[in-house]
Length: 70
Image 1 (cartoon, rainbow, N blue to C red):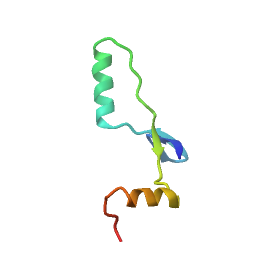
Image 2: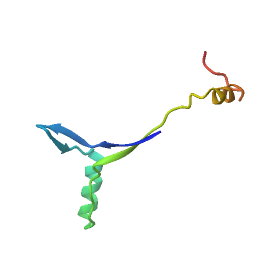
Image 3: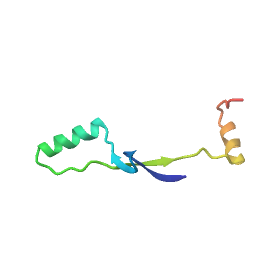
Image 4: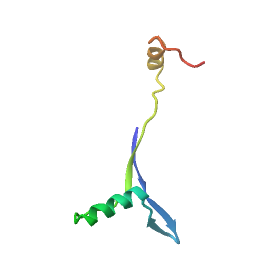
């Protein structure tokens, strides 16, 4: 349905400060220690999905032999 970005940041005094996870920092430091350049991700892509609410699709789910909650 939608494609959004989730920023790794905290709002402090009207500014955004980067907030990285321990894993992101650890892997980036290891990579840089080996002499390879590495960047820290500033955001993740988030896919927002929604179950269809079409009546014809709801009928197909019921007829598939599965029990639907009442």
